[in-house]
Image 1 (cartoon, rainbow, N blue to C red):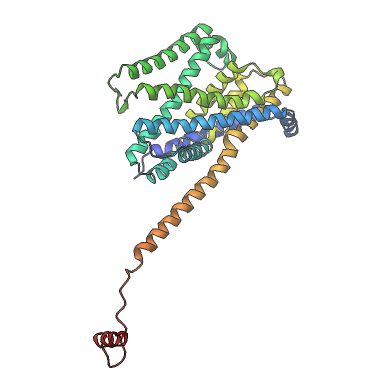
Image 2 (image 1 turned 60 degrees about the vertical axis):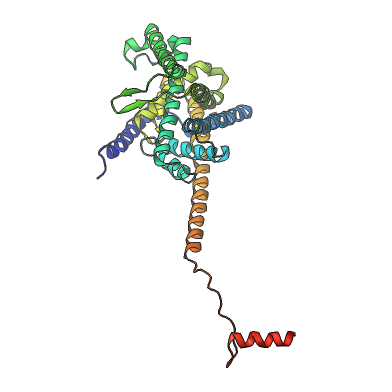
Length: 355
């Protein structure tokens, strides 16, 4: 019997899509498709190229997530190419389908068990990859709030007043960085695992921890860079504000369990950008569309091809193995004899002829 949570989270995700879709419609009902298309065409080609390069950086860092987890498990026999393809496919699908419905565990299980990993090892790998992303979000979120505590004031009137106060934002940022520092100290000092009810946090080796602190921010910086380069320079608030807004939007989208964060990401990002006129709104929508094309849709199409190719190869291998296993063993042919003679008589006759 399936757990109730398996039904609740998809329902929550669909509800989040419906609610955010309504608010997004209210926000965009005065916007025309032709104006958005014009805003997309107005993005300079070199900035589109920079957005594409940012996508490559993001997905390369995501592949590093898997590699870090494999190093933590002591697995070294899997090639970088296989790990990269597995990671790319996992995140491309989970980004579009939704983490609550398709966390990537199935793709990783199918791929890594074919390379000899056990189900328990795959579970640890998935958990460590998720924690690496969480760690990067906390690290960059804390840094952005410490660097610019006024960032949350963009959501004034939409969040409780104490949260949008710069002093409160600074305290939150320091608290986030303190969490990261404690995690680093636990790894360096080799502290005992931290138990929180059924959750167990086992500190990795310092080398693994250091890689996490590089890979996770690199992935998030690359993803945020897509939108940053797609925004027009005239209304671009700078990379730090865009990064902070992206982190908040992406985190809320993930927490909503909406498939692909559809609608949730857009409404949070557009709201936090503090739009003052329709032209700015068109430009922001165009940037968000470019982000979805590069970070969601194109990788999803490529990942489907990768999955089909992988499954076809596994099916062909399984059919080949079954065919080899069912083939009857070779039976030695009986000696050829002529009517009225046995093998001994034929052999004697041949000897007499040779002599």
